[in-house]
Length: 419
Ligand code: ADP
Ligand code: MG
Image 1: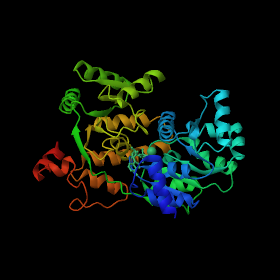
Image 2 (image 1 turned 60 degrees about the vertical axis):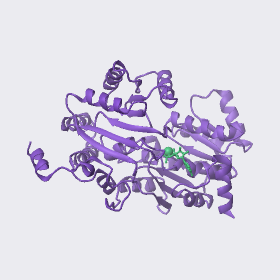
Image 3 (image 1 turned 180 degrees about the horizontal axis):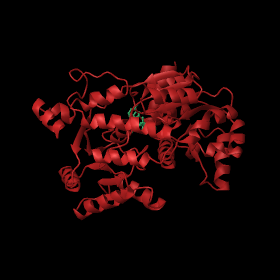
Image 4 (image 1 turned 135 degrees about the vertical axis):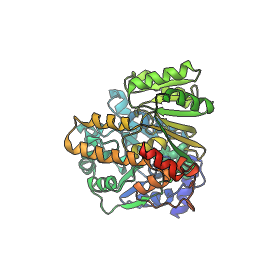
């Protein structure tokens, strides 16, 4: 019975005929009212895991999500799928009184199936008091790694969620979802959400269509990037830089070279950011040069390359950011430029932070060094880091990295190490 229903729902609401990966099992667990923990890589289809059961159940599901852009994206998509505009709402501080009233009345009348909130909005007494009186189907905590200091995006507001959920209702099922696979982060999530017994669904983190490549970063990095982008003309790509200044500089260098590129970072005003993001989504430009402020939850399936002008501060960040390439299953080239000097820079950034944080940061960085300098399969390295065994002979995408495709001869590797 339930099976027929969820397939009908999948078709009706999303127009899909098949579930991706573990979606079906996850959805059944949620419909069973169980606490559920979902670990799936970026692009794995986590949103549908809570969207479909929310649409198919009575009451409103509350979706906690860290970024307004991400929520807006999802609400727009849900509204496009449904004939009812009130099916999904965002509740945040940017709404005026009339808008808040509309949201509340849509929830009260049962029209609203998904309510997206930022964790800080959820601390507002007024909202908690209101939600207490409503029928809540479940609470989904998206990007649940934000709860953990070992995650790549710790947000203290996430620490308070369990409390608030309990205040909203006693027996509300909790769904945690993340794309971060490290065992430490997972432990933290389950502990903080108070659900050690959650039904846990963990997908493989292998992204067989992504090609991983690390190149030494030299003075000619601009020319290297421009050459790469020109070789991939007309394809969509993201270039990540550490600093806003570098974003601006590089975006300009690309533009001067006839490449349609826009900058994106938190120093730009909101209007410009939205405009540049939309230009990228609508393919008015091919390349967005960005700080890590860009991309969380951005659903552009055909990003063909992700370039790291600077090596990220952890393997998780690298995996998350490169994961924005090839979400449609097509080609995705992940090219990172690495210099040990950049590691030293990242170490220096941390020096003002509390000791505990520095220790975590240092440990994460050492893994990045290992990854960048390894001569073994990059894919195997990443998957091992996430607690997954990978066999390059039999595993999908086993040859899809620089070290596997162009193995260094032993003496070359030695010479390089001696330098
Ligand atoms: P995640 O949050 O895990 O990174 P998303 O929820 O953003 O992933 O989904 C990634 C993409 O997969 C989206 O474009 C979505 O429409 C698509 N998708 C999800 N489930 C299915 C499915 N069952 N069949 C086909 N495409 C799907
Ligand atoms: Mg997601």
